[in-house]
Length: 165
Image (cartoon, rainbow, N blue to C red):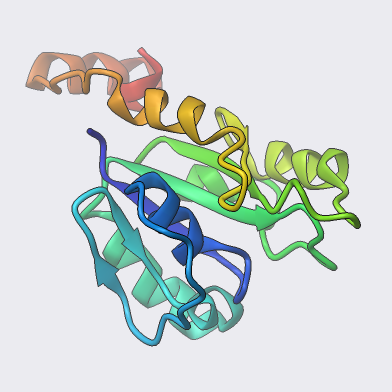
């Protein structure tokens, strides 16, 4: 399974999503430090909310993952992700919309934010009901393509990232 790096605002549902992906009961827990689990790297929301921490801390931890997940809840009051932010990453970037079961969910607006950020795929999920979790697990279970020196050089010559080949 691909290792998923989760970043997003405080209370967006990163820890709950980790619990749902692992098949554990979803219990609120405030993340105080970066947690390396078998399938996810769960970060405190404060890292994303603070420019100094997001630039230094999040970038370093993203290198330990196979895919980066930009996570926004469906009832997010504002967007933290700049348009095109995914181009700064050297990993595939996906969007994850959490809390789609909330009464005040605005999934279409959050989807637009994640598309503008440059997410390759977007997964709407509910950690409480389990909706959408299976599709995300299927994506994470897809075979990782092995990078060879020749593939990296081919991508570089074409001006692409290696996973765009």
